Length: 620
Image (tube, rainbow, N blue to C red):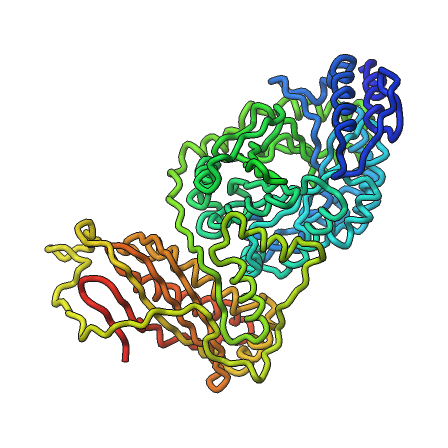
Protein backbone atom coordinates (compact mmCIF):
# COMPACT_ATOMS: atom_id res chain seq x y z
CA UNK A 1 0.00 0.00 0.00
CA UNK A 2 3.01 2.29 0.00
CA UNK A 3 2.28 3.15 -3.61
CA UNK A 4 -1.12 4.58 -2.76
CA UNK A 5 0.11 8.18 -2.22
CA UNK A 6 1.54 8.10 -5.75
CA UNK A 7 -1.82 6.89 -7.06
CA UNK A 8 -3.66 9.64 -5.19
CA UNK A 9 -1.24 12.21 -6.58
CA UNK A 10 -2.03 11.04 -10.10
CA UNK A 11 -5.76 11.02 -9.40
CA UNK A 12 -5.56 14.66 -8.34
CA UNK A 13 -4.95 15.42 -11.99
CA UNK A 14 -8.60 14.53 -12.59
CA UNK A 15 -9.85 16.72 -9.76
CA UNK A 16 -8.14 19.96 -10.69
CA UNK A 17 -9.91 22.89 -12.30
CA UNK A 18 -6.84 24.19 -14.15
CA UNK A 19 -3.81 21.99 -13.59
CA UNK A 20 -1.09 20.35 -15.63
CA UNK A 21 -0.90 16.86 -17.07
CA UNK A 22 2.40 15.10 -17.75
CA UNK A 23 2.94 17.20 -20.86
CA UNK A 24 2.59 20.44 -18.91
CA UNK A 25 -0.50 21.46 -20.92
CA UNK A 26 -3.37 23.05 -18.96
CA UNK A 27 -6.36 20.81 -18.18
CA UNK A 28 -9.75 22.52 -17.99
CA UNK A 29 -12.90 21.04 -16.45
CA UNK A 30 -16.14 21.82 -18.26
CA UNK A 31 -19.61 22.07 -16.82
CA UNK A 32 -21.89 19.04 -17.26
CA UNK A 33 -23.41 18.98 -20.70
CA UNK A 34 -20.79 21.24 -22.31
CA UNK A 35 -18.06 18.90 -23.59
CA UNK A 36 -15.82 20.22 -26.34
CA UNK A 37 -13.50 18.39 -28.69
CA UNK A 38 -10.53 19.76 -26.76
CA UNK A 39 -12.00 18.46 -23.50
CA UNK A 40 -12.50 15.01 -25.01
CA UNK A 41 -8.90 14.92 -26.23
CA UNK A 42 -7.61 16.08 -22.84
CA UNK A 43 -9.64 13.45 -21.04
CA UNK A 44 -8.28 10.77 -23.36
CA UNK A 45 -4.69 11.89 -22.66
CA UNK A 46 -5.28 11.94 -18.91
CA UNK A 47 -6.74 8.44 -18.94
CA UNK A 48 -3.79 7.19 -20.95
CA UNK A 49 -1.41 8.83 -18.45
CA UNK A 50 -3.16 7.12 -15.55
CA UNK A 51 -3.05 3.75 -17.28
CA UNK A 52 0.69 4.08 -17.79
CA UNK A 53 1.58 5.38 -14.31
CA UNK A 54 -1.17 4.25 -11.91
CA UNK A 55 -0.21 2.17 -8.90
CA UNK A 56 -1.60 -1.38 -8.47
CA UNK A 57 -5.26 -1.43 -7.44
CA UNK A 58 -6.00 -2.04 -3.76
CA UNK A 59 -5.87 -5.69 -2.76
CA UNK A 60 -8.64 -5.03 -0.23
CA UNK A 61 -11.08 -4.14 -3.01
CA UNK A 62 -10.05 -6.93 -5.40
CA UNK A 63 -11.93 -10.22 -5.07
CA UNK A 64 -10.69 -13.76 -5.69
CA UNK A 65 -11.77 -13.56 -9.35
CA UNK A 66 -9.73 -10.43 -10.03
CA UNK A 67 -12.66 -8.01 -10.11
CA UNK A 68 -11.60 -4.55 -8.94
CA UNK A 69 -14.34 -2.69 -7.08
CA UNK A 70 -14.01 1.01 -7.88
CA UNK A 71 -17.70 1.91 -7.62
CA UNK A 72 -19.43 2.41 -4.26
CA UNK A 73 -23.15 2.91 -3.72
CA UNK A 74 -24.12 4.49 -0.40
CA UNK A 75 -27.70 4.44 0.86
CA UNK A 76 -28.44 7.67 2.71
CA UNK A 77 -31.82 6.60 4.06
CA UNK A 78 -34.29 3.73 4.14
CA UNK A 79 -37.23 6.10 3.82
CA UNK A 80 -39.01 6.86 0.56
CA UNK A 81 -41.84 9.21 -0.36
CA UNK A 82 -43.25 6.77 -2.95
CA UNK A 83 -44.51 3.17 -2.71
CA UNK A 84 -43.56 1.70 -6.09
CA UNK A 85 -45.28 -1.64 -6.61
CA UNK A 86 -42.11 -3.40 -7.76
CA UNK A 87 -40.07 -2.07 -4.84
CA UNK A 88 -42.03 -2.31 -1.60
CA UNK A 89 -45.47 -3.15 -0.21
CA UNK A 90 -48.12 -0.43 0.06
CA UNK A 91 -47.74 -0.21 3.83
CA UNK A 92 -44.00 0.44 3.50
CA UNK A 93 -41.22 -1.49 5.24
CA UNK A 94 -40.09 -1.60 8.88
CA UNK A 95 -37.57 1.18 9.45
CA UNK A 96 -34.32 0.88 11.36
CA UNK A 97 -34.18 3.03 14.52
CA UNK A 98 -32.43 6.32 13.85
CA UNK A 99 -29.67 5.53 16.34
CA UNK A 100 -28.71 2.50 14.24
CA UNK A 101 -28.35 4.45 11.00
CA UNK A 102 -25.06 5.87 9.83
CA UNK A 103 -24.43 9.45 10.84
CA UNK A 104 -23.16 11.98 8.32
CA UNK A 105 -19.69 11.78 9.86
CA UNK A 106 -19.67 7.98 9.59
CA UNK A 107 -20.77 8.12 5.94
CA UNK A 108 -17.96 10.51 5.09
CA UNK A 109 -15.39 8.49 7.07
CA UNK A 110 -16.24 5.29 5.19
CA UNK A 111 -16.37 7.13 1.86
CA UNK A 112 -12.91 8.57 2.44
CA UNK A 113 -11.55 5.13 3.31
CA UNK A 114 -12.91 3.56 0.13
CA UNK A 115 -11.69 6.44 -2.05
CA UNK A 116 -8.19 6.07 -0.58
CA UNK A 117 -8.24 2.46 -1.72
CA UNK A 118 -9.25 3.22 -5.30
CA UNK A 119 -12.98 3.90 -5.45
CA UNK A 120 -13.43 6.71 -7.98
CA UNK A 121 -17.22 6.74 -8.29
CA UNK A 122 -19.82 7.07 -5.55
CA UNK A 123 -23.56 6.96 -6.11
CA UNK A 124 -25.97 8.09 -3.40
CA UNK A 125 -29.14 6.03 -3.16
CA UNK A 126 -31.95 5.30 -0.71
CA UNK A 127 -34.78 4.85 -0.12
CA UNK A 128 -35.03 8.27 -1.64
CA UNK A 129 -31.76 10.12 -0.98
CA UNK A 130 -33.19 13.59 -1.60
CA UNK A 131 -35.42 13.42 1.47
CA UNK A 132 -32.34 13.40 3.70
CA UNK A 133 -32.02 16.99 5.05
CA UNK A 134 -28.21 17.18 4.75
CA UNK A 135 -27.88 15.61 1.30
CA UNK A 136 -26.41 18.80 -0.22
CA UNK A 137 -23.78 19.00 2.50
CA UNK A 138 -22.88 15.33 2.02
CA UNK A 139 -22.32 15.90 -1.70
CA UNK A 140 -20.16 18.94 -0.95
CA UNK A 141 -18.02 16.96 1.53
CA UNK A 142 -17.61 14.06 -0.92
CA UNK A 143 -16.58 16.52 -3.62
CA UNK A 144 -13.50 17.40 -1.54
CA UNK A 145 -12.17 13.82 -1.58
CA UNK A 146 -9.11 13.57 -3.78
CA UNK A 147 -9.36 10.79 -6.33
CA UNK A 148 -13.17 10.76 -6.50
CA UNK A 149 -14.08 11.48 -10.12
CA UNK A 150 -17.87 11.00 -10.12
CA UNK A 151 -20.60 11.72 -7.59
CA UNK A 152 -23.96 10.47 -8.79
CA UNK A 153 -27.41 10.17 -7.31
CA UNK A 154 -30.39 7.94 -8.06
CA UNK A 155 -33.67 9.66 -7.28
CA UNK A 156 -37.39 9.33 -7.93
CA UNK A 157 -37.31 12.98 -8.96
CA UNK A 158 -40.01 14.30 -6.64
CA UNK A 159 -37.65 16.79 -4.93
CA UNK A 160 -35.12 17.10 -7.73
CA UNK A 161 -36.18 20.38 -9.36
CA UNK A 162 -36.01 22.17 -6.00
CA UNK A 163 -32.64 20.78 -4.90
CA UNK A 164 -30.68 20.30 -8.12
CA UNK A 165 -29.20 23.82 -8.40
CA UNK A 166 -27.72 23.46 -4.91
CA UNK A 167 -26.56 19.91 -5.61
CA UNK A 168 -24.81 20.97 -8.82
CA UNK A 169 -22.94 23.74 -6.99
CA UNK A 170 -21.95 21.20 -4.31
CA UNK A 171 -20.40 18.93 -6.94
CA UNK A 172 -23.05 16.48 -8.15
CA UNK A 173 -21.93 15.22 -11.56
CA UNK A 174 -24.40 12.47 -12.57
CA UNK A 175 -28.15 11.95 -12.22
CA UNK A 176 -30.38 8.89 -12.59
CA UNK A 177 -34.13 9.57 -12.41
CA UNK A 178 -36.68 6.79 -12.02
CA UNK A 179 -39.73 7.08 -14.32
CA UNK A 180 -41.71 4.02 -15.39
CA UNK A 181 -44.48 5.63 -17.43
CA UNK A 182 -45.32 8.76 -19.38
CA UNK A 183 -49.02 8.52 -18.47
CA UNK A 184 -49.90 10.48 -15.31
CA UNK A 185 -52.71 8.13 -14.28
CA UNK A 186 -50.50 5.09 -14.68
CA UNK A 187 -47.72 6.80 -12.72
CA UNK A 188 -50.08 7.22 -9.77
CA UNK A 189 -51.10 3.59 -10.04
CA UNK A 190 -47.51 2.30 -10.09
CA UNK A 191 -46.08 4.45 -7.29
CA UNK A 192 -49.29 4.67 -5.23
CA UNK A 193 -48.71 8.40 -4.84
CA UNK A 194 -49.09 11.59 -6.87
CA UNK A 195 -46.10 13.43 -8.30
CA UNK A 196 -45.78 12.80 -12.04
CA UNK A 197 -45.48 16.51 -12.78
CA UNK A 198 -42.74 17.00 -10.19
CA UNK A 199 -40.68 14.23 -11.78
CA UNK A 200 -41.05 15.79 -15.20
CA UNK A 201 -40.02 19.15 -13.75
CA UNK A 202 -36.93 17.46 -12.30
CA UNK A 203 -35.95 16.03 -15.69
CA UNK A 204 -36.53 19.44 -17.26
CA UNK A 205 -34.32 21.10 -14.64
CA UNK A 206 -31.51 18.57 -15.14
CA UNK A 207 -31.46 19.26 -18.89
CA UNK A 208 -31.65 23.00 -18.26
CA UNK A 209 -28.61 22.86 -15.97
CA UNK A 210 -26.54 21.08 -18.59
CA UNK A 211 -26.45 17.46 -17.40
CA UNK A 212 -25.92 15.22 -20.39
CA UNK A 213 -27.01 12.59 -20.61
CA UNK A 214 -29.79 12.67 -18.06
CA UNK A 215 -30.34 9.00 -17.26
CA UNK A 216 -33.96 7.91 -16.95
CA UNK A 217 -34.47 4.49 -15.34
CA UNK A 218 -37.59 2.61 -16.47
CA UNK A 219 -38.46 -0.75 -14.91
CA UNK A 220 -40.37 -2.63 -17.61
CA UNK A 221 -43.26 -4.79 -16.37
CA UNK A 222 -45.39 -6.97 -18.58
CA UNK A 223 -49.01 -5.94 -18.73
CA UNK A 224 -48.25 -2.55 -17.22
CA UNK A 225 -45.84 -0.43 -19.24
CA UNK A 226 -44.20 -2.55 -21.93
CA UNK A 227 -46.48 -0.83 -24.44
CA UNK A 228 -44.61 2.45 -23.79
CA UNK A 229 -41.17 1.34 -24.96
CA UNK A 230 -41.39 3.15 -28.29
CA UNK A 231 -42.65 6.32 -26.67
CA UNK A 232 -39.71 6.43 -24.26
CA UNK A 233 -37.26 5.89 -27.12
CA UNK A 234 -38.89 8.62 -29.19
CA UNK A 235 -38.12 11.09 -26.38
CA UNK A 236 -34.41 10.65 -27.13
CA UNK A 237 -34.85 12.13 -30.59
CA UNK A 238 -34.56 15.70 -29.39
CA UNK A 239 -33.47 15.36 -25.77
CA UNK A 240 -30.11 14.41 -24.19
CA UNK A 241 -31.61 11.43 -22.36
CA UNK A 242 -30.23 7.96 -21.75
CA UNK A 243 -33.42 5.96 -21.26
CA UNK A 244 -32.42 2.80 -19.42
CA UNK A 245 -34.89 -0.09 -19.63
CA UNK A 246 -34.44 -2.32 -16.58
CA UNK A 247 -35.59 -5.92 -16.45
CA UNK A 248 -38.05 -6.51 -13.61
CA UNK A 249 -36.10 -7.86 -10.64
CA UNK A 250 -37.04 -9.57 -7.36
CA UNK A 251 -37.09 -7.59 -4.11
CA UNK A 252 -38.70 -8.32 -0.77
CA UNK A 253 -42.32 -7.24 -0.85
CA UNK A 254 -42.81 -6.76 -4.58
CA UNK A 255 -44.47 -10.17 -5.13
CA UNK A 256 -42.01 -10.81 -7.95
CA UNK A 257 -43.32 -13.05 -10.71
CA UNK A 258 -41.12 -14.10 -13.62
CA UNK A 259 -44.07 -13.71 -15.99
CA UNK A 260 -43.93 -9.96 -15.35
CA UNK A 261 -40.41 -9.74 -16.73
CA UNK A 262 -39.89 -8.50 -20.28
CA UNK A 263 -36.47 -9.67 -21.42
CA UNK A 264 -33.83 -7.50 -23.03
CA UNK A 265 -34.09 -9.40 -26.32
CA UNK A 266 -37.86 -9.00 -26.45
CA UNK A 267 -37.56 -5.26 -25.81
CA UNK A 268 -34.82 -4.94 -28.42
CA UNK A 269 -36.96 -6.75 -31.00
CA UNK A 270 -39.81 -4.32 -30.33
CA UNK A 271 -37.55 -1.33 -30.84
CA UNK A 272 -36.00 -2.70 -34.02
CA UNK A 273 -39.42 -3.19 -35.59
CA UNK A 274 -39.85 0.58 -35.36
CA UNK A 275 -36.20 1.57 -35.92
CA UNK A 276 -34.37 -1.15 -37.91
CA UNK A 277 -31.33 1.12 -38.06
CA UNK A 278 -30.88 1.02 -34.26
CA UNK A 279 -27.15 0.67 -33.67
CA UNK A 280 -25.14 -0.82 -30.80
CA UNK A 281 -22.78 1.53 -28.99
CA UNK A 282 -19.44 0.55 -27.46
CA UNK A 283 -19.48 -0.01 -23.70
CA UNK A 284 -16.98 -0.11 -20.88
CA UNK A 285 -15.97 -3.50 -19.51
CA UNK A 286 -17.66 -2.95 -16.14
CA UNK A 287 -20.83 -1.38 -17.58
CA UNK A 288 -24.16 -2.88 -16.55
CA UNK A 289 -25.93 -1.36 -19.55
CA UNK A 290 -26.10 -2.42 -23.18
CA UNK A 291 -26.35 0.89 -25.04
CA UNK A 292 -28.03 1.61 -28.38
CA UNK A 293 -28.81 4.70 -30.41
CA UNK A 294 -31.12 5.58 -33.26
CA UNK A 295 -28.90 7.39 -35.81
CA UNK A 296 -29.65 11.09 -35.77
CA UNK A 297 -31.23 11.03 -32.32
CA UNK A 298 -29.71 13.26 -29.65
CA UNK A 299 -30.01 10.74 -26.82
CA UNK A 300 -29.69 6.97 -26.51
CA UNK A 301 -31.31 3.95 -24.90
CA UNK A 302 -29.79 1.25 -22.73
CA UNK A 303 -30.84 -2.09 -21.30
CA UNK A 304 -30.01 -3.30 -17.78
CA UNK A 305 -30.12 -7.08 -18.24
CA UNK A 306 -29.87 -8.16 -14.60
CA UNK A 307 -32.12 -11.19 -15.14
CA UNK A 308 -31.66 -12.47 -18.70
CA UNK A 309 -27.97 -11.70 -19.22
CA UNK A 310 -26.32 -11.03 -15.88
CA UNK A 311 -23.10 -9.02 -15.66
CA UNK A 312 -21.63 -10.68 -12.58
CA UNK A 313 -18.32 -11.38 -14.35
CA UNK A 314 -17.45 -7.68 -14.64
CA UNK A 315 -19.18 -6.38 -11.51
CA UNK A 316 -17.19 -3.59 -9.84
CA UNK A 317 -19.84 -2.46 -7.35
CA UNK A 318 -20.04 -2.47 -3.58
CA UNK A 319 -22.93 -1.20 -1.48
CA UNK A 320 -23.21 0.30 1.97
CA UNK A 321 -26.72 0.22 3.42
CA UNK A 322 -28.23 3.04 5.45
CA UNK A 323 -27.50 1.13 8.66
CA UNK A 324 -23.86 0.64 7.71
CA UNK A 325 -23.78 -2.90 6.34
CA UNK A 326 -21.44 -3.70 3.47
CA UNK A 327 -23.05 -5.73 0.68
CA UNK A 328 -20.79 -7.13 -2.01
CA UNK A 329 -23.73 -8.32 -4.16
CA UNK A 330 -27.20 -6.85 -4.67
CA UNK A 331 -28.77 -10.32 -4.76
CA UNK A 332 -26.77 -11.68 -1.84
CA UNK A 333 -27.95 -11.91 1.75
CA UNK A 334 -24.42 -11.74 3.15
CA UNK A 335 -23.64 -8.47 4.93
CA UNK A 336 -20.98 -7.25 7.35
CA UNK A 337 -21.58 -4.30 9.68
CA UNK A 338 -19.00 -1.58 9.16
CA UNK A 339 -21.02 0.62 11.52
CA UNK A 340 -20.46 -1.69 14.50
CA UNK A 341 -16.71 -1.89 13.92
CA UNK A 342 -16.49 1.86 13.34
CA UNK A 343 -18.31 2.61 16.59
CA UNK A 344 -16.19 0.07 18.44
CA UNK A 345 -13.13 2.13 17.58
CA UNK A 346 -11.65 -0.04 14.83
CA UNK A 347 -8.58 1.46 13.18
CA UNK A 348 -8.39 2.18 9.45
CA UNK A 349 -6.24 -0.91 8.93
CA UNK A 350 -8.72 -3.08 10.85
CA UNK A 351 -11.61 -1.76 8.77
CA UNK A 352 -9.68 -2.52 5.60
CA UNK A 353 -9.09 -6.09 6.76
CA UNK A 354 -12.84 -6.51 7.38
CA UNK A 355 -13.70 -4.99 3.99
CA UNK A 356 -11.08 -7.10 2.23
CA UNK A 357 -12.40 -10.30 3.82
CA UNK A 358 -15.97 -9.51 2.68
CA UNK A 359 -14.86 -8.68 -0.87
CA UNK A 360 -12.77 -11.84 -0.95
CA UNK A 361 -15.87 -13.94 -0.22
CA UNK A 362 -17.79 -12.50 -3.18
CA UNK A 363 -19.05 -15.27 -5.47
CA UNK A 364 -18.40 -15.48 -9.19
CA UNK A 365 -22.15 -15.41 -9.76
CA UNK A 366 -24.87 -15.29 -7.19
CA UNK A 367 -26.27 -18.81 -6.79
CA UNK A 368 -29.86 -17.86 -5.90
CA UNK A 369 -30.17 -15.76 -9.06
CA UNK A 370 -28.92 -18.66 -11.19
CA UNK A 371 -31.45 -21.06 -9.65
CA UNK A 372 -34.24 -18.52 -10.11
CA UNK A 373 -33.49 -18.20 -13.82
CA UNK A 374 -33.22 -21.97 -14.29
CA UNK A 375 -36.53 -22.67 -12.54
CA UNK A 376 -38.53 -19.85 -14.15
CA UNK A 377 -40.88 -20.44 -17.09
CA UNK A 378 -40.42 -18.57 -20.36
CA UNK A 379 -41.95 -15.13 -20.66
CA UNK A 380 -45.44 -14.86 -22.13
CA UNK A 381 -46.11 -12.80 -25.24
CA UNK A 382 -46.73 -9.11 -24.83
CA UNK A 383 -50.31 -7.83 -24.87
CA UNK A 384 -50.68 -4.08 -25.13
CA UNK A 385 -53.37 -1.53 -25.71
CA UNK A 386 -52.41 1.55 -27.65
CA UNK A 387 -55.55 3.51 -26.83
CA UNK A 388 -55.68 6.51 -24.52
CA UNK A 389 -57.28 6.29 -21.10
CA UNK A 390 -60.50 8.23 -20.52
CA UNK A 391 -62.28 9.08 -17.30
CA UNK A 392 -65.59 10.87 -17.57
CA UNK A 393 -67.53 13.34 -15.47
CA UNK A 394 -64.67 14.74 -13.38
CA UNK A 395 -64.53 18.37 -14.44
CA UNK A 396 -61.22 19.90 -15.46
CA UNK A 397 -59.42 16.64 -14.72
CA UNK A 398 -61.11 15.33 -17.85
CA UNK A 399 -59.67 18.15 -19.95
CA UNK A 400 -56.16 17.33 -18.73
CA UNK A 401 -56.39 13.65 -19.56
CA UNK A 402 -58.06 14.42 -22.88
CA UNK A 403 -55.04 16.63 -23.69
CA UNK A 404 -52.74 13.80 -22.73
CA UNK A 405 -54.83 11.37 -24.79
CA UNK A 406 -54.60 13.63 -27.83
CA UNK A 407 -50.82 13.60 -27.55
CA UNK A 408 -50.77 9.91 -26.73
CA UNK A 409 -53.11 8.44 -29.35
CA UNK A 410 -51.06 6.75 -32.04
CA UNK A 411 -47.98 8.35 -30.54
CA UNK A 412 -45.11 6.63 -32.33
CA UNK A 413 -41.84 7.80 -33.77
CA UNK A 414 -41.51 11.52 -34.45
CA UNK A 415 -45.00 12.33 -33.11
CA UNK A 416 -43.87 11.49 -29.59
CA UNK A 417 -41.69 14.58 -29.71
CA UNK A 418 -44.96 16.46 -29.07
CA UNK A 419 -45.09 14.76 -25.71
CA UNK A 420 -41.49 15.73 -25.06
CA UNK A 421 -42.29 19.33 -25.93
CA UNK A 422 -45.36 19.20 -23.71
CA UNK A 423 -43.37 18.20 -20.62
CA UNK A 424 -39.74 18.98 -21.44
CA UNK A 425 -39.95 21.94 -23.78
CA UNK A 426 -38.57 25.44 -23.46
CA UNK A 427 -40.40 26.16 -20.20
CA UNK A 428 -41.26 24.21 -17.07
CA UNK A 429 -44.25 21.87 -17.51
CA UNK A 430 -47.52 23.30 -16.20
CA UNK A 431 -50.19 21.25 -14.47
CA UNK A 432 -53.67 21.58 -15.97
CA UNK A 433 -55.68 19.04 -13.97
CA UNK A 434 -58.05 20.04 -11.16
CA UNK A 435 -59.95 18.29 -8.40
CA UNK A 436 -62.94 20.65 -8.84
CA UNK A 437 -66.18 19.48 -10.44
CA UNK A 438 -67.79 22.46 -12.18
CA UNK A 439 -71.55 22.77 -12.03
CA UNK A 440 -71.75 23.33 -15.77
CA UNK A 441 -69.76 20.22 -16.65
CA UNK A 442 -71.68 17.85 -18.84
CA UNK A 443 -71.92 14.61 -16.86
CA UNK A 444 -72.39 12.60 -20.01
CA UNK A 445 -69.66 10.91 -22.01
CA UNK A 446 -67.06 13.45 -23.16
CA UNK A 447 -65.10 11.06 -25.36
CA UNK A 448 -64.41 12.30 -28.87
CA UNK A 449 -63.98 8.78 -30.16
CA UNK A 450 -66.83 7.87 -32.46
CA UNK A 451 -68.34 4.45 -32.30
CA UNK A 452 -69.78 2.83 -35.39
CA UNK A 453 -73.54 2.30 -35.06
CA UNK A 454 -74.49 -1.32 -34.53
CA UNK A 455 -76.74 -2.91 -37.06
CA UNK A 456 -79.61 -4.87 -35.52
CA UNK A 457 -79.60 -8.42 -36.73
CA UNK A 458 -82.61 -9.89 -34.98
CA UNK A 459 -82.62 -12.22 -31.99
CA UNK A 460 -79.31 -14.02 -31.69
CA UNK A 461 -79.44 -17.79 -32.05
CA UNK A 462 -79.16 -19.69 -28.79
CA UNK A 463 -77.84 -23.12 -27.98
CA UNK A 464 -79.22 -25.81 -25.67
CA UNK A 465 -75.69 -27.09 -25.07
CA UNK A 466 -73.00 -25.67 -22.81
CA UNK A 467 -69.94 -25.06 -24.93
CA UNK A 468 -67.29 -25.30 -22.19
CA UNK A 469 -67.87 -28.92 -21.23
CA UNK A 470 -67.02 -32.08 -23.11
CA UNK A 471 -69.25 -35.09 -23.77
CA UNK A 472 -68.57 -36.41 -20.27
CA UNK A 473 -69.39 -33.12 -18.54
CA UNK A 474 -65.82 -32.10 -17.80
CA UNK A 475 -64.62 -28.52 -18.24
CA UNK A 476 -62.96 -27.96 -21.61
CA UNK A 477 -61.82 -25.02 -23.68
CA UNK A 478 -63.63 -24.48 -26.96
CA UNK A 479 -61.52 -25.12 -30.06
CA UNK A 480 -61.71 -21.96 -32.18
CA UNK A 481 -59.05 -23.05 -34.64
CA UNK A 482 -61.55 -23.51 -37.45
CA UNK A 483 -63.40 -20.23 -36.98
CA UNK A 484 -62.89 -17.28 -39.27
CA UNK A 485 -61.36 -14.07 -37.95
CA UNK A 486 -63.97 -11.32 -37.74
CA UNK A 487 -64.13 -7.88 -36.14
CA UNK A 488 -65.39 -8.26 -32.57
CA UNK A 489 -66.73 -5.50 -30.32
CA UNK A 490 -68.31 -5.78 -26.87
CA UNK A 491 -69.57 -3.23 -24.36
CA UNK A 492 -70.29 -3.97 -20.69
CA UNK A 493 -71.29 -1.85 -17.73
CA UNK A 494 -71.39 -1.75 -13.94
CA UNK A 495 -72.60 0.61 -11.24
CA UNK A 496 -71.02 1.35 -7.87
CA UNK A 497 -73.29 2.93 -5.24
CA UNK A 498 -70.85 4.80 -3.00
CA UNK A 499 -73.14 6.65 -0.61
CA UNK A 500 -73.00 10.41 -0.02
CA UNK A 501 -69.79 10.61 2.02
CA UNK A 502 -67.55 8.51 -0.24
CA UNK A 503 -69.15 10.03 -3.34
CA UNK A 504 -68.29 13.57 -2.23
CA UNK A 505 -64.65 12.62 -1.58
CA UNK A 506 -64.36 10.92 -4.98
CA UNK A 507 -66.04 13.87 -6.67
CA UNK A 508 -63.57 16.33 -5.13
CA UNK A 509 -60.61 13.94 -5.48
CA UNK A 510 -59.87 14.08 -1.75
CA UNK A 511 -59.34 10.39 -0.94
CA UNK A 512 -56.07 9.74 0.88
CA UNK A 513 -55.32 6.81 -1.42
CA UNK A 514 -55.37 9.09 -4.45
CA UNK A 515 -57.59 9.62 -7.47
CA UNK A 516 -60.09 6.76 -7.27
CA UNK A 517 -61.51 7.36 -10.74
CA UNK A 518 -58.27 7.24 -12.68
CA UNK A 519 -56.97 4.27 -10.68
CA UNK A 520 -60.21 2.35 -11.27
CA UNK A 521 -60.14 3.23 -14.96
CA UNK A 522 -56.56 2.03 -15.27
CA UNK A 523 -57.37 -1.17 -13.36
CA UNK A 524 -60.20 -1.86 -15.81
CA UNK A 525 -57.89 -1.49 -18.80
CA UNK A 526 -55.31 -3.76 -17.18
CA UNK A 527 -57.95 -6.36 -16.29
CA UNK A 528 -59.24 -6.52 -19.87
CA UNK A 529 -55.73 -7.40 -21.05
CA UNK A 530 -55.38 -10.10 -18.37
CA UNK A 531 -58.80 -11.77 -18.77
CA UNK A 532 -57.48 -15.10 -20.06
CA UNK A 533 -55.30 -15.38 -16.95
CA UNK A 534 -58.23 -14.65 -14.63
CA UNK A 535 -60.99 -16.71 -16.29
CA UNK A 536 -59.64 -20.26 -16.83
CA UNK A 537 -61.37 -21.22 -20.08
CA UNK A 538 -61.14 -17.88 -21.85
CA UNK A 539 -58.97 -17.72 -24.92
CA UNK A 540 -56.13 -15.26 -25.11
CA UNK A 541 -57.27 -12.33 -27.25
CA UNK A 542 -54.94 -9.72 -28.76
CA UNK A 543 -57.05 -6.64 -28.07
CA UNK A 544 -56.75 -3.76 -30.51
CA UNK A 545 -58.75 -1.34 -28.37
CA UNK A 546 -59.78 -1.00 -24.73
CA UNK A 547 -61.73 1.93 -23.37
CA UNK A 548 -63.05 2.39 -19.84
CA UNK A 549 -65.32 5.32 -19.04
CA UNK A 550 -66.48 6.39 -15.57
CA UNK A 551 -69.40 8.76 -15.04
CA UNK A 552 -70.45 10.40 -11.77
CA UNK A 553 -74.15 10.21 -10.93
CA UNK A 554 -74.88 12.71 -8.16
CA UNK A 555 -78.57 11.76 -7.88
CA UNK A 556 -77.69 8.20 -6.81
CA UNK A 557 -74.26 8.98 -5.29
CA UNK A 558 -72.94 6.43 -7.73
CA UNK A 559 -70.33 5.89 -10.39
CA UNK A 560 -71.39 4.37 -13.68
CA UNK A 561 -68.78 2.32 -15.50
CA UNK A 562 -68.76 1.41 -19.18
CA UNK A 563 -66.06 -0.73 -20.75
CA UNK A 564 -65.63 -1.52 -24.42
CA UNK A 565 -63.19 -3.94 -26.04
CA UNK A 566 -62.38 -4.54 -29.68
CA UNK A 567 -60.33 -7.21 -31.44
CA UNK A 568 -60.16 -9.09 -34.71
CA UNK A 569 -60.13 -12.82 -34.20
CA UNK A 570 -62.05 -16.10 -34.02
CA UNK A 571 -63.60 -15.48 -30.59
CA UNK A 572 -65.57 -12.69 -28.94
CA UNK A 573 -64.45 -10.11 -26.41
CA UNK A 574 -67.51 -9.88 -24.15
CA UNK A 575 -65.58 -11.51 -21.28
CA UNK A 576 -62.86 -8.89 -21.63
CA UNK A 577 -65.43 -6.09 -21.45
CA UNK A 578 -67.22 -7.65 -18.47
CA UNK A 579 -63.92 -8.24 -16.66
CA UNK A 580 -62.87 -4.64 -17.24
CA UNK A 581 -66.15 -3.27 -15.85
CA UNK A 582 -66.12 -5.63 -12.86
CA UNK A 583 -62.51 -4.97 -11.87
CA UNK A 584 -62.97 -1.22 -12.24
CA UNK A 585 -65.93 -1.50 -9.84
CA UNK A 586 -63.91 -3.60 -7.38
CA UNK A 587 -61.09 -1.06 -7.52
CA UNK A 588 -63.49 1.75 -6.66
CA UNK A 589 -64.59 -0.26 -3.63
CA UNK A 590 -60.97 -0.79 -2.59
CA UNK A 591 -60.16 2.90 -2.95
CA UNK A 592 -63.20 3.94 -0.87
CA UNK A 593 -63.53 1.16 1.73
CA UNK A 594 -61.64 3.15 4.39
CA UNK A 595 -64.41 5.76 4.25
CA UNK A 596 -67.39 3.42 4.02
CA UNK A 597 -68.04 -0.27 3.59
CA UNK A 598 -71.68 0.38 2.81
CA UNK A 599 -70.84 0.33 -0.88
CA UNK A 600 -72.86 -1.71 -3.35
CA UNK A 601 -71.49 -3.13 -6.60
CA UNK A 602 -74.15 -4.08 -9.09
CA UNK A 603 -75.68 -4.08 -12.53
CA UNK A 604 -72.65 -5.79 -14.09
CA UNK A 605 -73.96 -6.74 -17.49
CA UNK A 606 -73.23 -7.04 -21.18
CA UNK A 607 -74.67 -4.12 -23.12
CA UNK A 608 -73.85 -5.28 -26.63
CA UNK A 609 -71.63 -7.52 -28.71
CA UNK A 610 -71.04 -7.67 -32.45
CA UNK A 611 -69.26 -10.17 -34.65
CA UNK A 612 -69.22 -13.94 -34.60
CA UNK A 613 -71.39 -16.70 -36.00
CA UNK A 614 -74.00 -16.45 -33.22
CA UNK A 615 -74.91 -12.97 -34.36
CA UNK A 616 -75.05 -9.63 -32.63
CA UNK A 617 -76.56 -8.83 -29.24
CA UNK A 618 -77.96 -5.51 -28.04
CA UNK A 619 -79.58 -5.11 -24.64
CA UNK A 620 -82.80 -3.14 -24.86
